[in-house]
Image (spheres, rainbow, N blue to C red):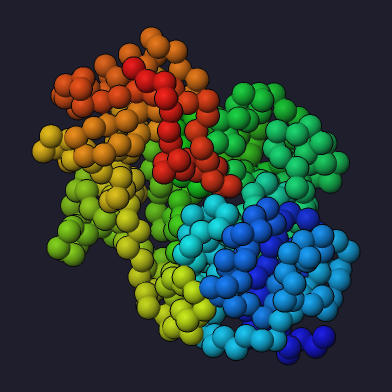
Length: 437
C-alpha cells in the first residue's frame, strides 16, 4: 500500500500505549490520514456503530479483533496490529482535518471534536514552550493515547525530538516504577485520581533520581493535595505543573506557574503561549473587574474546528474561528490568574435558589468530605465512597447548613467507588446507590 492511498481518508484507530499501536498512529498521521481515535477496549457494538455513522475506509486495530469487521480486508500487518480496508465508502473530508477525539474520554462517545493539523501543531508548540521540553526529555506514558491529555504528551515530546517510554502498565504497578528507573524517565502526567492514589502509595518516599517534571490536568484537584505534591517536588528538585484544558482546545488552555502554587493552588493560572483568556456575562459583555464571575472564554490557534456526530460533518469548515466558550464559570484575580468556580450545566434550582454543584463539592471538601454531587431541581443528591451511616448524616447536615435548606431537600448516598471515565473523571450520569441517609 502506498502513502497516498490513506492520505485524506478516514481511519478509525483503536490505539493503546503499545509500540506497534503508536507507531501505526504516527505513520498514519505523517501520511495525512484523518484518524478517529478510540480505545482498543471499545466494545464490538460501539465499534459497529462508529463504522456505520462515520464510514471509515480504513481501521487500525489489534489483529485479534479484525474478525469483528467482516466487510474489511486486512492489507497491512505490523506485529500484533493490522490495517484493514473497505473501499466502499466515499466520505468527503475537509482538507484541514487531522483527528477526531471523543468529547468525554469514555468509550463510544456519540460526539467527536474535529481537530485540525494546525490545532495539533500549535498546541504541541505551546506545551513544549512553557514546559521547556527538549530532546533530552524522556516521558513515560501513563494516560490513554485516545484521551486528549495523553495524546498531547506524545505530540509535544515528539515535536521536541524526545524519546518516549511506552508502557501500558498502571502507576499502581510495581513493574511501572521498575521500568521508570531502569530507563531513566524524566516526566509523567496524571489526573487528580492518580495523585490521590500516589499519595496513598507514599510517592514522597519513592526513589526516582531521573524525575524532573510532573504535570496534572483532567479536572479539579484538591488545592491541599496540589500544595502537598508541590512541596514534595520542591524538596526533590522536581517541577510540578497544574494545568487546565479541554479536548475542544486540542488539550491545553492554561497552566499555573510552579512559583505561584504556595499562594494560588486553587488557580488554573494564565493562558498558554499564543492564547488569551477572558470572562463574559450571560449577555456576552466582557468582565474586566477582579472577582467577577462569568463564563471563561479562550482564544487561540489550538481551538478545534467544531464537532462531528457522523460522516456528513467531516467536510464542514472551521466553525469556531479560534474562539472557545469553555462552559466553565470562573473568576480572575488582580494578577490576571483565573479560578474555576463552577460549570454552566452543573446547576440545580433548589426551591428558587440556583445552586452550583461544583461549589457544593468544594465546600464539602473543605469540611472533610470527598463527594460527587448530582440531583434534580428541588433535590440535591450527595455521593460518598464507602461511607457509613454517621458519615452520611454528617455530610447531609453540612450541606443543608451551607445551603440553608431543609433536610428534605438533600439525600446522601454511599457508593463503593465513583464511576469514572478512562481519563479518571467522575461520570455523574452513572451515579446511583440504594443506600442513603
